[in-house]
Length: 109
Image (cartoon, rainbow, N blue to C red):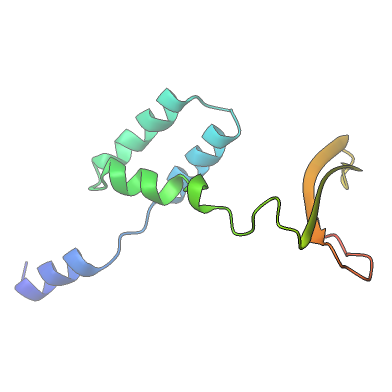
């Protein structure tokens, strides 16, 4: 392998396989447990990924998620129940709208 090819291989970002994102989805929705999730990720280590790289790319940083405080005086936050648009029963969500909203907010599903 030439030096240029080695440098390119070291600097080009590696694409995490879609399976890893699918496994995280299964883990997050309770279809597999944590042990199974990490066991599956371990198979990608053989492809040259580190567990640190994989988990930092897949698992959200929930601590950094808040952008607006839940008690911000400019918003009105409530839990609302709604019928599932595809007939799967009733759902519940956390709805936040501007406190001084003058028109009815359009909801998107």
